[in-house]
Structure formats: structure tokens, C-alpha cells
Picture 1 (cartoon, one colour):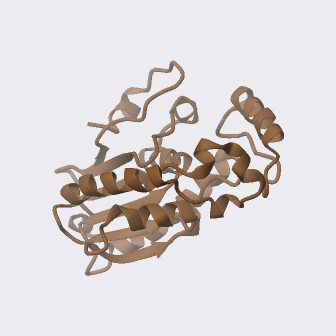
Picture 2 (tube, rainbow, N blue to C red):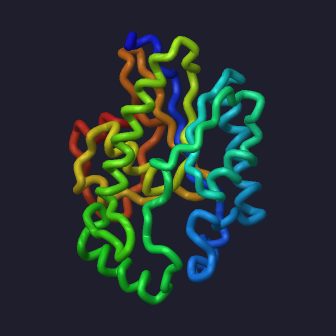
Length: 226
């Protein structure tokens, strides 16, 4: 692939506020993939869409979207249909699998275990570990890079996904250590991170993720953002 075919921007956005963000007991009766946005979540996505439209400079956008209802609704509420030439549902960008219908008390117990065991390696019962999500994100990156090679590849790419998936995408892209990943806080609902192409055709994040525990990133890790 010629380096000039790489997109100028790769934007990542977390879905807007969902009903389960307000009440985790929703997961007891509604499948994770079927949890909808709240009215506020739609408003968050609409506001984010205005910012993304400005970022994309009115140019075409290739979209990859998690097939979960809340991400599909987020994409719809962004209001960018006139810029989107192709919106592809991408199951590898889905949320971390936690369980089927969830037992709220059991999930709270497992979250405490995860905090002591490690967010990257802890595997939820009937679900995935962070490392499992990392593997499928790695597989997705291979597909995305092949798509960059198409003659009509747009200058803008948008991934509509989930907080953990966004962090692991960046971990994989920038080759961050597990230790550094463990300190990163999820972005907020409808919050973005953007990989911006530099003159040397490498990418840098427009800003880092917040950290929830103390850890000084290495010089190489710090070089990932502007």
C-alpha cells in the first residue's frame, strides 16, 4: 500500500448513553446487544456528529460500526448520512462479552475480582477477557488496512464502538504495554479519540485517555499522542 492512501483521520467514538449506563439491572432482562440509547444518548450523539462533521471537513467517510443496537443508534443520530459512502457492521468491534442475561450481584462480584486480577487478563464467566477483545481487534485491523488499499478509499474513517474496544484498538495500534493499558479510563459516552496522520504518515492521537491509577507511560507510549 502506498502511504499516501492512508486516511488522514481515523476517528473512534463510544456509543451515547444507554439505558444500562443508568441501570445495570437492565442486563438481567435485555440482551447486551439489544440495549438502546436513552433520549440523552441520542442528544450526545447528535452533538458529537456536529463536531465530527467539522473534523471531516465535509468529505466522505468510511464507517465501521459495532452491530449492537446502541452503536447503530449512535451512528444514526450522528447525522452524517450524507458523508457516509459505506457503513459496514463489524462484529469484531462489539462490546466485551460479559455473559448472557446477567446476574447483577454476580457481575459486581466479578468486577471486584477483575480489579485485583487485572482488566486485561480477567475473563468473565461465560464471557471474554480484555485479551480476547484485543485478539479480535487485531484481526479487524488487518481488514481495515486492506480496505485502505482500495482506489476509492476515503480520507476519513470512523469506528462507532465501545469504550473498552476503543482503548484496546489504540493499545494494539500503538503497541502499548499491558501495564499501561491497565491504567486507562474508559472514554465517556459519545466521547471521541482521533488518530491524525502526520507528515511522516504515522498517526498520533489528538489527546490521551485519562488514567484511573498512577503509572508513568514510557517515552514511546507518550509519543502516541500530540
